[in-house]
Amino acid sequence: MKIAYLIHWNEGPGSGVFKKVLGQVTAWSRLGHDVSLFLYTHHWEQDWNLEFHNIPLHVQRYRGGFGRLSDFRRLITEVKRWEPDVVYHRFDLYYPGLPSLLRRIPSVIEVNTNDLTEMQSGGKFRYLYHRLTRAAVLKATSGYVFVSAELAEEVHFQKYVRDKVIIGNGFDLFGVASSPPEKREDTRIIFIGTHGQSWHGVDEIARLAQAHPDWRFDLVGIYASHLEGPAPSNMIFHGNLVRDEYEPLMNEADVAIGTLALYRKRMAEASPLKVREYLAYGLPVIIGYKDTDFPEPVPFILELKNVPDSTSLDQERIEGFIEKWRGNRVDRSLIKHLDTAAKEAERVDYMERIAKKDGPR
Image (cartoon, rainbow, N blue to C red; front, side, top):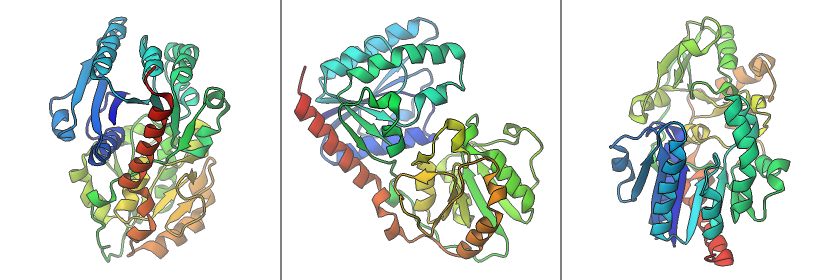
């Protein structure tokens, strides 16, 4: 099967989305499919080609203003010229020509977030544009992949959905090695995030750090300036790092922290990539939401309430969790269902079904 992956993305190899897309297309290729990535971006670096190895990468850089519309049409022309059996598209903004492409070729849209809620935090014009045009994209596609059951049940998606599947985010478990824990007296906690995403709950981490000055908190992708007030001295801000640079911090950590303020996106369920990466390294995790792939409680995930000030409300549970897991790692056999190979085999099966059902149009 020929699969065209169409995506608008501006962050490079260090971003979680880039890693996810790379893992997806690599897995599809290993399963015997012919895959090409069609990337629409205003920031492209030549070494991106090196990351994708044998996966053809078609890059369309865009300018500002109305020129970006014609730039997108050029990329769509490339997709059509390649004649794929199915188009896989990470849901984003409407562009002229996109709906007609999704109608013409059997297509699957991946929905990763509550787009209406998330875009409200951006510019008013961009939000209004998206609000007025999103239906044209959603109506045109054949199938949907949702990363959580909660998203799949959202009313503003349900009215367009004809065929869907729920597949939480995965991670290449065999791409990293779970390190043996170090025996130390101190406690080390790691968090990996991105600036400008309030739902990460870095302010919650700051409250936890303030309450436990003897714990060390390593924050990757975050800077002290992202906090509204002064940061506790036991919060170490490393800024943006690639995996080779932050891997030693993962190996030294006792526990990792995931998203702690998902209520700010009006969401209660998710399957974040960073949590799967933590678990791949064997780290137990503290989160503030329901994880799609762990519907029942498991001992290596501490789920806090999805409410403001959750770290203060659950101090005793957090302390007990960390004490229990210090010097231990999560058994790889307990998280094997998170592996990219298993996730992508399911995704490809779904795309094949869509392609056979709808056929060329």
